[in-house]
Length: 155
Length: 259
Image (cartoon, rainbow over all chains, first blue to last red; front, side, top):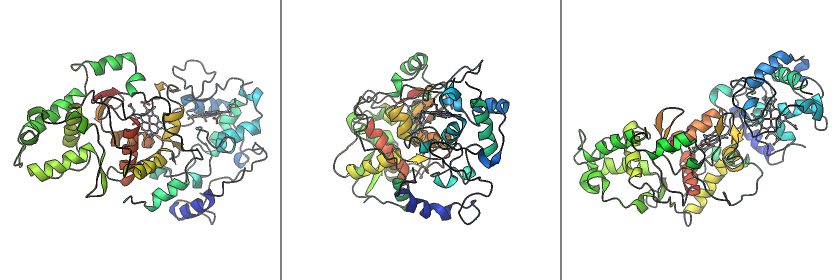
């Protein structure tokens, strides 16, 4: 699905506002471009390898992934789960790793109405970020790969 | 009359592709229905409700002549505001034809203070104004919210609804996603309500303070890691107006107890 046409002029209009953005295309220097193939992203972000152990910490940390805000996860000792998204137990038997990657990077490509945040969404698409978040992604490329490595264990 | 600044227009274009449905075609439900039973009990008991502290502070500011003022509010509106008409208080925010702008109850109080009692100007959400607003709104407790939705309000409400349906911040969500699509669901340990305005100013258990509708909107925006709209911005007025119109028919609960 390409960018909706109506978005393009808007994005262009916003470009000069992204003060922190560097480079001619307005993307922050450390943002790795990713390529969507069908409904998946095949290549790991920035070519990084994920660590499932770190990923399991990120998904339950409210300051980082905070996936638990919306999803139930098979992690013991958690008091409160959200019920907005589907439970993620068994997700790796339903979806391939490349499919999971697109879902975590930018769920809007799968469901334009999704409430799920894009954790590695193109920062130029973010409307009105707080000043300290301008030009940033929700998670770093490494953190996204860690989360994906963890989700891949949920068979 | 409505002044669309550049940001509003740009945000408007970032709207979610949703057909504008009649919001809450279902039933408007107060935040009261979503909070824990213990919080409801706290709200229902004036001695337990911490928001009553603000009402009492407001009562004193209302009845007593303030330093530097020529008159007390009570000189015109009666001791304890007995001359207020609850149905009239329940109409706020209103549209002021002369000034061509939305006027919230707090702004009306602020103007009245300055014009008729000779008091010094206070910025929006100054603690004295919040206490006065809480006291005055509490005079209309039980009265159904009744914001004008026709005439000049139509365009303003439409602008408010657009803001409500726009995504903001790093979390990149719109108000309507949480408060129209997912009420009743849990976001971590918290049950999401319809984001109704009938209880405001409300005492928030999370922050332990009396909170105006403006401040609550700003707090949701901050938790979305968005740059909150300023208290005196056109956007927050339009959002507040729209939220209050969604509460039409719900009883005023000020000071409500909320998460």
